[in-house]
Length: 261
Image (tube, rainbow, N blue to C red; front, side, top):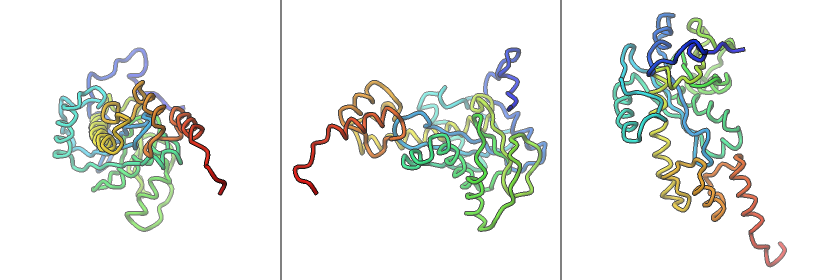
């Protein structure tokens, strides 16, 4: 069983804002580039899932960086600009609806993180990941092979931080509530949220009847009413039950063909 972070126990309080404890621990143990990763968009009924990976210079912090859900949109955009300017590297991974429906949303979220990892330069050797899951090794191997064109020896599945891996694959550690306690993960959450919101604004222009600009694809009364009225759009996730039910209703309501084929 995974050992929870101390601040999840009753006798400890969480940090008042994200700090760099995890990054500093990684650098002390010999890692060269420590990246924070987070995803946005696991819950919505529509649109992609977006992940970001960020490597910040050791010791560089911003006092206003928080979990993106705790920040208003204007502040997120301001901080995203600062993070992109100051980061050693940052990257996005975007996984479309078709892959979400094929893989399931958890695996699609982890794939988005692996894509973001694969686009970082320099390539990180330690990944700090928000949540309770690390990235599946096949996803990382695919990214590494795309870059290097070779094979990689398998590393241990154990999620704890030990030392830099001799395989070429990064070490990983999953941090429950990481966007609330780890500075680079919180920075990644901001980058991912701003990017996904922009995508949803663009999808709103393409499919204005659904109100994506307002609810960003998340479930709401207005979104449910639009699904009932118009049926699912091509960017709705059919593997999500409210969308699937709307898809079935729209299929049942379709007129029968006049002639047999």
